[in-house]
Length: 336
Ligand code: KG4
Image (cartoon, rainbow, N blue to C red):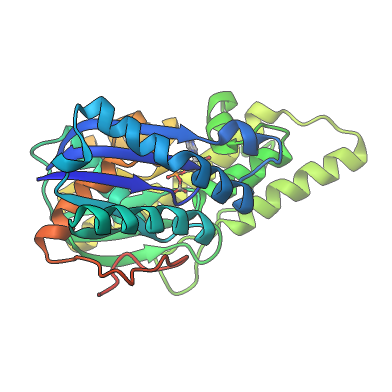
């Protein structure tokens, strides 16, 4: 079954042609350079660029795969969660295509597709497993019971991990996307020099809170600038990265133990973080847990992962009608 998948939930316009877990093509048009000027994604600009680029990106995905519209058996699209104006561009384009080709339209949840990025290179990976999904807009621990059956174990009460990295990085004077650049320049954490807090969420051992950490970094930078003191940015970056990873690692392993899973999967843009990968790897080795994380090119937003998840959504009967709408927020365990 050949699926043409479309992704436009944030600042990447992407299309891919996939067959099961096999990727025939994957095209990504990123708007990073444009949003860099503003220090973050400007939703209105993102929507307009998707509008301009989507037809060319889809054409290129078909061309790269050596296929034509007539070869396609289904259209898949990210419909939630994400920037509403950005999602609407992909959803409407996908609807038009599905209608004109007379093929099914498969709605795909963005976080489910991030998890599916792990299926691309790992043929043997199958649910059930525990998954930590960390991106610019979400941070959740999910027990993946089956390809389309999810149980949320914990999540952030405020900012996402990526958002905390991005906002703190911007205040440190690093270019967008801050999380990536913060990870690059971070050296060795020094919690005596920069005593950032260790946030805990009362009443839930699996939930996260990142906004206090972000505020602590902003206050520290403001105080230093008022006193004319210089900040050692690589050390501050490493200290923040360590604190964020402490929380992610600790809660994830609690969940793994509690639910008795022997496989851990990392997903989302922040799963590219070098410290997170290294610490998860060494903890998993110690505890005999099998660890998977996506190839770097599939960590960020792309349509290949959308197409792979779409195959399982289709098999479970998740087909959209022509009234499919985009949704800005939707839990991963939503029911149709
Ligand atoms: O999954 P993604 O591409 O988009 C969303 O769906 O949100 O994730 C983007 C997020 C951004 O916050 C970016 O700064 C962060 O992932 N990110 C990183 C790294 N690479 C990307 N954060 C920390 N370390 C990295 N190496």
